[in-house]
Length: 295
Image 1 (cartoon, rainbow, N blue to C red):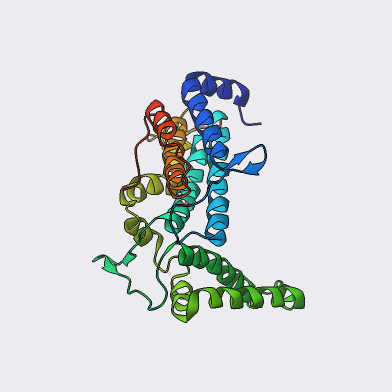
Image 2 (image 1 turned 90 degrees about the horizontal axis):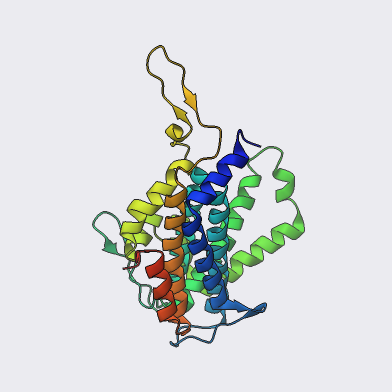
């Protein structure tokens, strides 16, 4: 246990009681959109470019977003704000992936001049294709990891396991068949599920403001450039002060960021699956003073 941890946790829960209760209610509401009594509640999409693959990918990503939002709550309640902030970065990437799959119309752009990514004839960039791009990238990532094993001493034996090798090869073949050669090249070159960088994808999805603020803020602790959260650089001749106990710092920010990102996910799922929960969503957004990060 960290120094004075129990007392610090109690102070955090007491000081942020209303915020934590609101986040918990919002999380419970978000989960209720897709699951009730252990069953999936999705009522069906309103457009033709939604099929079983789109539903499965969307449901998986939304579930992941709910998990990450809940994890952030638990860390915040414990007074571990810096770690909760780190999770918001992960939640932002999950939000991007879900928005990528579910946005009705999407034109990908890249580079400083935001040039449109040329379309691929015969492969319209609708939700059906985007869901398959997401799945294909998982196969390509497995392939990249597996290939790296052969270059690292001590890991080469894993590369030689026939069953694992056949499984990865089949995953890659299925992925390539589902998205075609040009999209295969784009995904492999970019090492992403969209064919563009995270920043370019955020700009294309009209989440530029969220990228520049929420994502950047969450990156500090991930990349270990938040030293001043844990130690105070001393004046000449004086010892440094270190922060070992949990505390209130970053707690409110982490919870608010996570709420805003989950709101984006909730709105996409509500809209594309025709759940008709608009009024309830807006009530939660109003009570928690949430921004609409989606453009």
